[in-house]
Image 1 (cartoon, rainbow, N blue to C red):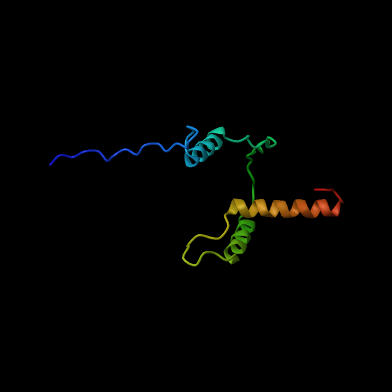
Image 2 (cartoon, one colour):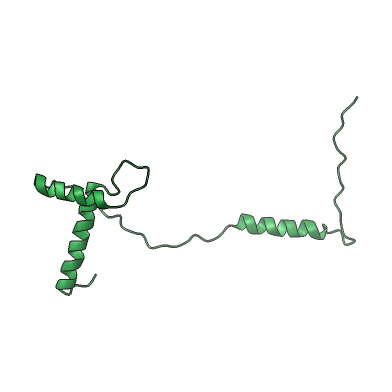
Length: 108
């Protein structure tokens, strides 16, 4: 048994010799797609530079912080504490900065 390709459909033209309306719309759609768009202009953001430093803290203060961290709600099946020591310290610093700004009437 011989296998042959499916029959080809002839392009449909209107009486003026122009391609059919469907083909014309398809071409317009492709033109729009290929045209692309303008790029979004955003203001360049300067990346915040991270600084590292060492901190000395007493064992008693660290124990208190660990107890406070343990009180935070955590995921039911997670053995980890809800917040890391570093995140807890950063939160504490941010809260202190906000209180000081409010106390000395400094804008944000």
